[in-house]
Image 1 (cartoon, one colour):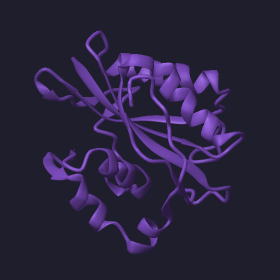
Image 2 (image 1 turned 120 degrees about the vertical axis):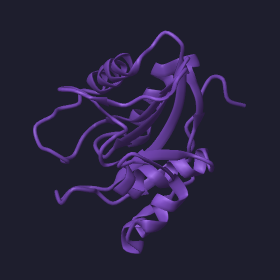
Image 3 (image 1 turned 135 degrees about the vertical axis):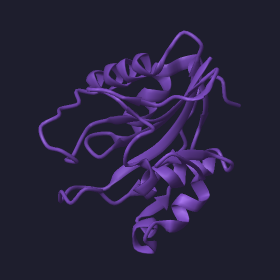
Image 4 (image 1 turned 60 degrees about the vertical axis):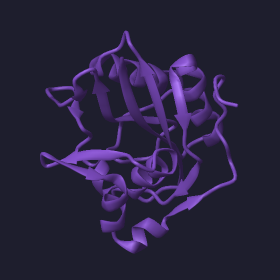
Length: 175
């Protein structure tokens, strides 16, 4: 089995519907979804706030590159345009980490880097992930570190830019 942590976000159009499209598109592979957060844009580009969440999923038939392909399919279905780094987007689906039978998968090639190289400094990834998996860990610089510790290390002002909403993503296999 391979399991994945996906960070999803949208700040264009019907943001909530875009996030829900990921959960719907992954179907029975979805194990859990985090609460939805409204977050300030990250990366220095002036734009509207995002809705962000984390999705935990697993599928024994997929490896890390297959998960990346699924992420791109979901983004393409939402008419994702890649014309500005860290710019506004209809949908962003990032692989944060992937685990296989042997443990955490490490990839560094032309199309994929795992664990995600910026996840450990992004409150909009860590806060939702921690909410859905309080015991989560992430390998950073070769060291396995608790997500709670990584989040605590982020500037309080940035953590404050990640605000819980009342919105909920609904998965078919969640009660």
